[in-house]
Image 1 (cartoon, one colour):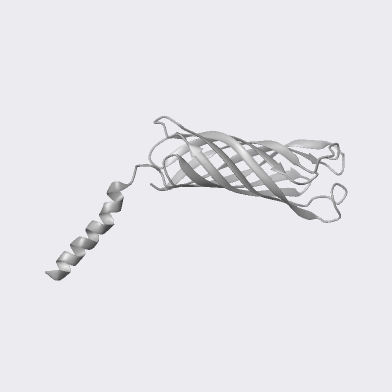
Image 2 (tube, one colour):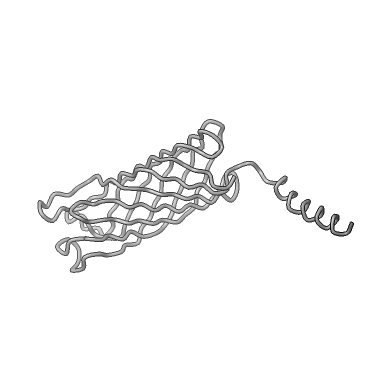
Length: 185
């Protein structure tokens, strides 16, 4: 009898927090295509390339219906074997509607430029740079665990890649489209 009461109390204690929770996705991750318009010089022609395709993964930890934490990771091919790996951590503010979920985000992080030619910036073949990211987007739910994502963000790196500019900051627009999976609801 005592065992039955203890088990019943334990089950009730586990069920009470579930009843009190609001219904919104707690952890979401997305995968998709990203296009970054970052000025990046080609060492063979000297022409500054503008659009670089890549892969993006974004994971959101939603603390409430409106506020959450966000981690963005992108890998971009910069041409001639050069690669940019970026990672940003920040905050996310969203409005949860029935048909779509618009949001705004901001974060700080880094960019790791691998295969950078020594003639543009320094004598090393790779370098890291501090970065910032600010943007907005929308998720379009297709069900309880699946959504489509469209996002625009501005990414800036503290690295002088553009030889026509005297600034040590280089920035570009990033457009991401992809599929969002809800991991924990």
